[in-house]
Structures are given as C-alpha cells and as structure tokens.
Amino acid sequence: MALNRRSLLTAASAGVALLGTTVSAAEAAPAVPAFKAPTAKNPLLLCFNENPLGMSAAARKAAAHATVQGSRYPFLRTEVLRKAIADYMGAKPANIMPSHGSAEAIRASIEAYNTPDVQVVVPELTYSDGADTARKNNMKVTTVAMGKNWSIDIPAMKSAVAAHKGHSIVYFVNPNNPTSTLADSKALLDWIRSKPAKTFFVIDEAYTEFVDDPKFVSATTLVKEGYENLVVLKTFSKIFAMAGMRLGFAFAHPKTINQIRRHVAYDVMMNICSIEAGLAEITDKAFIDFSRSENAKARKLLCKALDELGIEYLKSQTNFVFMNLKAPLKPFAERMKAEHILVGRPFPPAVEWCRVSLGTPAETAYFVKKLREFRQKGWV
Image 1 (cartoon, helix red, strand yellow):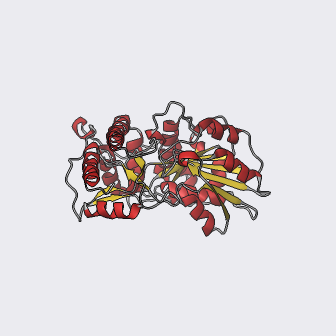
Image 2 (cartoon, rainbow, N blue to C red):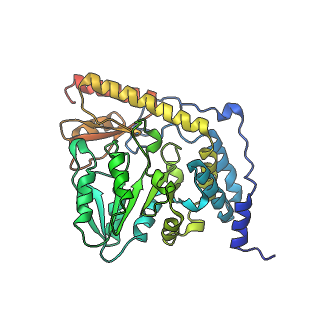
Image 3 (spheres, one colour):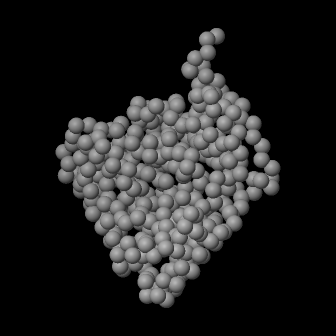
C-alpha cells in the first residue's frame, strides 16, 4: 500500500506508539525552583505572565528525547496531540486545532472571518494581538471603553456590534489581560447564544486554569452545546509553563475549525519537541494541580501585602495582579529595574496601574520585600 499523508494520519488516529520516555517517581514529583536573588544578568521576570515553575520533568525529558525525530515531519504526532487535547477538553479531535502558540490561532481565527465590511470589536484594555492582526489585514478596529473598575463592558460591546451594518468579530481575553478580572459570564454567554447576525466571537481563555471564582463559566460550554459562532483559544504557555515552546490550540465546532484551518499550515506548523512536551504536560495532573496551587499561594501573598500597604488592586483570577500606583508607572518600573525586578509595561489608558506577574512564592515574597522598602522611601 502506498504510504501517503492520509494513510499516516489514519495510522495516527488509530493509535501510534508514543516516543519512549520514562521519568522516575522522584523526577516526576513537582518542585519549586530554588530561589536566587536577582541580578542584572538574571533579573526577576515579573513582566510576561510566565509560569515560574518551568516545564515539568516529564515534559523536559520528552522534548529532549524528541530531538532524535527532528529530521521527520511531525504529521503523526500532531494527530496524537489533537487526540490528547480533545481528551483533556472532554471533546472530539474534530473540535481541536493545535497551533504554534495561541498567537497563531488568534491570527488564523480573525483572518478566517475577514470580509470587506468587517469590524473587529475589542475592549480598550485587552491582549493586543487581536487588534494587531486586524490592522495588519486592513480591517476596521472598533475599540470599546472599559466599564467600572476596568471591567469589560459587555452592553457597550453589544452596542458597538449593533451599530455596525456589516460583519463583526468580537475579541477579548477572559479572564482579561492586563486587568486579571472576569467578564460577566451570564452576559457574555447569553450574548453568544443569541446568535447576533453576522457576528463571530474569538474568546481567548489563556488563563482560565487559574480561575477560582465559582461564578465563572467557560465559553467552551457553548462549543460543547454545538454553537458555531465562536472559537475559544487556549495556550500551553501559562498553566503548563511552556511559553518558550510555542504551543496552543483552538477549540470550536468542527465546521468552525475547518474554516480556521484554511488559514494555517496545519500539519507542519509545530515542531516535534513542543508536541512531545505538550503531550507529557497535558496528561500530568499532578503538575497542573501543583502549578495552580503555587500560583494561588503567590497571589494570596501579594494581595495580603497590598492590603496591608493600602494599595488598590483588582481581584485577580490569573497569574498576575493589576495594582493602582496612583502615580505614573515609569518611575516605579525604573526603580524596580534598578533592583533587578522587571514589571509589566504601560497599558494606556490605565497609565497609573502596574501589572505584576506572579513568581514563585519565594520570588513574590522578594518583590513584596522591595515594595515595602519602596513604601518606606515614599516611592509607592
């Protein structure tokens, strides 16, 4: 029988032996990296919302072992990854499109629904890739002002869609970046369920694994209910600690996935090392739980200190905290940089607010120590 891509993918879906990697129980046990005081060469990175734990031992070993397959295209393993993600999501492989980071999925999702009369509707504070993709494709971007306490104003976004005679793509992150807060789940899901004419929703759920608010309902619920007017984007960069490996996925109705897939080099867009690391991570419940619990510890530590210092902040549902300096960000950021700590960039119009990514509990405690020193000096 001739060996072609279709037969390879059929073999993969039938079940292909995983690349052989074994990790001892001691190696597999999650652990917090030892804390070292930051230096100019190795600053404390509280600026990119990365997972400070690093990849799990199993993922590191899987990625290293995968280099022996570096001369081969990853067709088979991509299909195995799709199946593993589908199992993780409680869905079918047809609902999944693995991607080169969630950034690739954002681009493809927006380009897939581009029309001559389209607008991309975004809140003024959210991850910029949605609007950036629109502008690169000469699409109209409609920015909607934030609500109270920098919340996503769903009624205002609905009005922006209703006022436009053409097609609309609605994009934002939930929980949001940089605010760290949740959109109103009922308002959002009711809006999507209403199927507004000529409207497609791109909901970026990069941080949902950190959410502890019992009122939160993921937009993935609507995909499982069969809605075709949305895609939910996920990433391996946060809870799975794989930001440098560039792996994510789109989750949507099979018809929607097929539409988006037309805008990516689907079969070969990821490298074998990231695929194997992702396969190891997504089945490692102990690491996922550990990652979530360590983040919760760091978040509690920082928020307790902010309460004691009387510094306003928004209730975080992510791996970062958005705090109000009540003064321009630049001097604070420069002083932290002098202490070898890098904090988030400016996010206009919230020009006096600072996004601080959560480190390990020890790293966060070090930041808190410096924050208290700043208070003693009258800098915050």
